[in-house]
Image 1 (cartoon, chains in turn yellow, orange):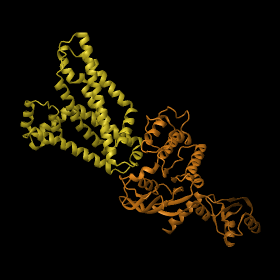
Image 2 (tube, helix red, strand yellow; image 1 turned 120 degrees about the horizontal axis):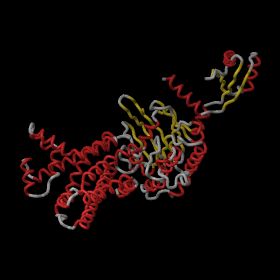
Image 3 (cartoon, each protein chain N blue to C red; image 1 turned 90 degrees about the horizontal axis):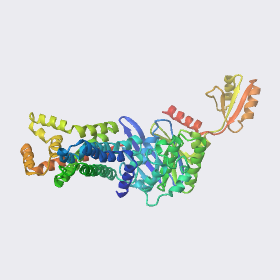
Image 4 (tube, rainbow over the protein chains, first blue to last red; image 1 turned 90 degrees about the vertical axis):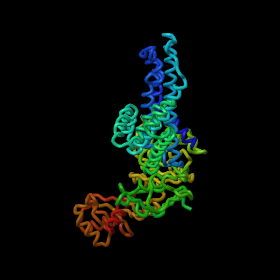
Amino acid sequence: MLTLIKQEWMKALKQNRFYVWAIIAFLMPIVTLVWFIPAETQTIGYMALGGAKIVVAIAGSVIAALTFTQEFSYGTIRPLLSRQYSRFFIFLSKIIMIVCEYVIVLLSAIFGTLIGRFIFQMLNGKNGTEIDWQPFFFSQVMDVLMTLFFFAVVLLVANMVKSSAAAVSLGIVMSVATSIIAALTTFLVQFFEPLKWNPFTVESLLANFDGTTAHNQALELYFGANISIIWVVYLLYLAAIYALTFLIFQRRSV
Amino acid sequence: MSLLELRHVSKRFGSYKALDDVSFSVEPGRIVGLIGPNGAGKSTAMRAMTGLMRFDEGEIVFDGQPVQFSKTRALAKMGNLIEYPSIYPNFTARDHMKYYAMDSKDPEDIDELMALTGIDGDNFGKRKAKHFSLGMKQRLGIAIALVRKPKLVILDEPMNGLDPQSVREIRELIQQLSEKGIAFVVSSHILDELQRLADDVVIINKGQIIRQTTMADFLSENKAQVKVKTSDNEAMLEAAKAAGWQAKLGEDKDVMITVEEGVNAQAVLRKATAEKIDVQDIQTGTANLEEHLMEVLSDKEKKA
């Protein structure tokens, strides 16, 4: 397993896209926080990582989509699978590396945000640049948890169609159109109430989870279930999509 | 005990039988040429051997362990190059070697192997593989197949894209390695090359094994022929047949007469003179894998 992770890491380091996304995620908050976001909205800007959140989400989706599909397009899927390793460990090593790459891009954005804040303070003083660290980090952890859902869907499509273009397109659409999908599914709930448990609605409502009692209560009221049950449902959806993706990967003749 | 054994392996794609009760074996240190026309089942058999494709019936045993789809523990000591060299475009040749060497606790010496396969020169150096020519990729693919110190190497069309000099170098490399005990299963459309390279031959057509024998035995079945061009080839053919010789018209309408005891170029010339037929050209051909393969496949078709 360690060998597989080392090999995936080697592949990641040799891809220009990894550095490009990390650099964009780092520079974007510096530029927006220093030049475009006024003092009175700096705090909101920090939570959005200076606008880099969307970049991080797209980067994650693109990385997830390409990690599998590029093996097909390069033809390297054959040497990859005709080795002594089980397909489960090959699959797992790829998922681990996708999450690692995503977290590194996210850390670049966080680091860029902090640098942007520092430069802003140097230029404009500290007024309005306070960060409430607990919600700030809570928000980033929630992003990682929610992005696992994007990855799951993107990986499922990538393994079904073996097409980088389709998977990347879906990843980008998923990254920017979550609110549209959520609004659509929520609209449909009024016609058939059990639809509220569809994975997109569960994911989109949990994405705003901030750990406060008020928000917990709102979620519990909407779903008519305890918050822990909502989390369990979300995790079950994740497990089911990853399991289905693995089954497709595991059964594929190449 | 055989290093690799396929026992009654069958594979269907819908109603099409890609492999039909395929059985053959590979001994250590032997070079086996897997030959047959396009769509015969060569690549399918190779994919089954390397655990890349599930098969419906039969079993494949490599080095005493079963090779099964997606359960490929047995494959640690098998190298392969199936259909085309698979490369990571952003890796250099050395990156590829390092990457695949990680799979083995005791890999080949990378520098030595790169020198042996000719991928250590300036052309390779720090260049990314996306800039390699097909021939360079092919050499790299062969080096990758060898890096884990395999006991068996499966090469599907390894000579594709190589210039004559490279073909010769790769042939010599394979022969050197087979002398050290490494077995090879090689498929190639360049049958002349395979004739020089392989110790054994496995002929496959329409998913069925038609013959497994040594290359020497297979070629000995293909007797030399006298090819004669005359002023009246039809008359020459009749005369040859009347003399009890095996004769036929070739593709270019010349008369092809099989060399046997008492039947050679001199006898053919005497016969032509006796029949008052002018001989314009006469040649004696040697045993040829391609011709014999065609004959074998054509005989099989007729019997079917």
